[in-house]
Length: 218
Image 1 (tube, helix red, strand yellow):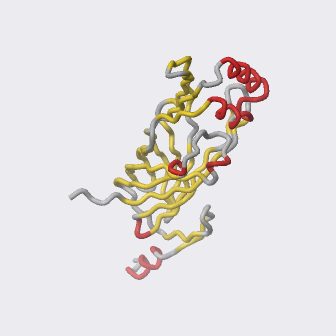
Image 2 (cartoon, rainbow, N blue to C red):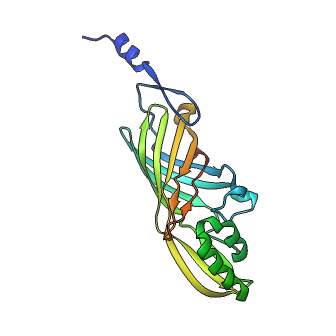
Image 3 (spheres, rainbow, N blue to C red):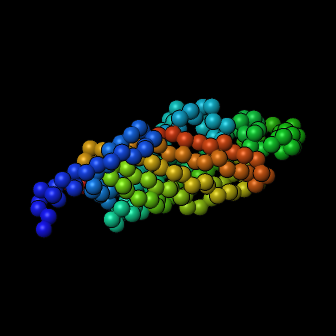
């Protein structure tokens, strides 16, 4: 019969894993992530991104809250982005930033529209709620964040809505390292390159994130 010392030795057995933050050591136990969390995600280089309209420094970090449930190493939960639901910008500026996404043909077509509507703006709203599904392996956590609902676009001129459209949000992959006894998760998120309905490649996005356990409510 194995002794208690044998059990302790097995619990301390470790191995290395490749991780975006470097090589980490995982042990033969699973950290529990059940409960409520709060934190943020940030873009690596927001100002140079051609797939975003956001310019203000306040958007470099998006605050989030999360609630996780864990069964063995399977992780499920919800995450909510806390930010203005609607972002508005000049369509002329939007079109120039998104010229690679629109493609040459559509870019030139919209240029003609702007000739007659130079003050037109575009309002972009993302859904706030998302589901999370993944796993916990030792000190490492992986999950995919899937937004609920569609991203909407509205074309407005002088406060008059001209038209609107909607499209699905792309899933976001999160990979993190659990620290401080299971109270902090830090890591990287990414959105893979994908294609617009017109077949134009939309560049990938990535950045960092941090989640901390929410303090208990007294």
